[in-house]
Amino acid sequence: MNMEKLEFDSLKISEQNFVKHEGVISKISENSIIVSLKGNINCVGCKAKAACGTSESNDKEIEVLNKNQSYTLNETVQVVLEKKLGLKAVFWAYVFPFILMLTTLLISSIFFKEWFAGLLSLFVLIPYYLMLYFLNNTLKKAFKVTILKFN
Image 1 (tube, rainbow, N blue to C red):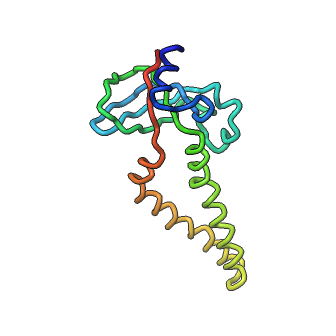
Image 2: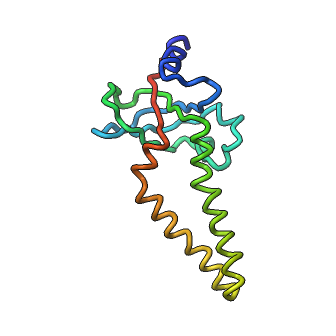
Image 3: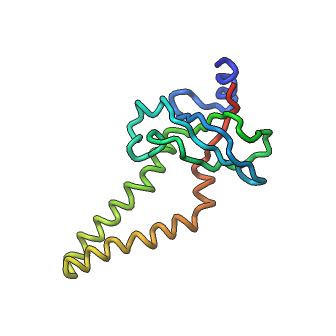
């Protein structure tokens, strides 16, 4: 625990401002590391656990940019994410699309029949998720996930 505290201090991350998950490195490539997440006791008190999905099963994987650090396959690590970034991710993945769909439904129901307004409100999500897909590299930089060796 002492070594872990030193590593967090060196990253200037206070324990109240981050969420950590224990995981195992399942794949290492030149540019990224894939970490398979285990169940986490920190998820019990999290307000966003229903939307996050990492608390229900052990087969979640997360991709972390490789910064030329020495990690090995099947090594136990901690995945660290700032809480504010987790809430921001939930907003862009779930809340904003819901608001977009509901707004489209309400506005288009004024001009079109109900069935067409419903279809239009569903189809408006296609360009939104395509935009997220094409902004994948930008989002990876914005939602920076860090891994720490587990001692």
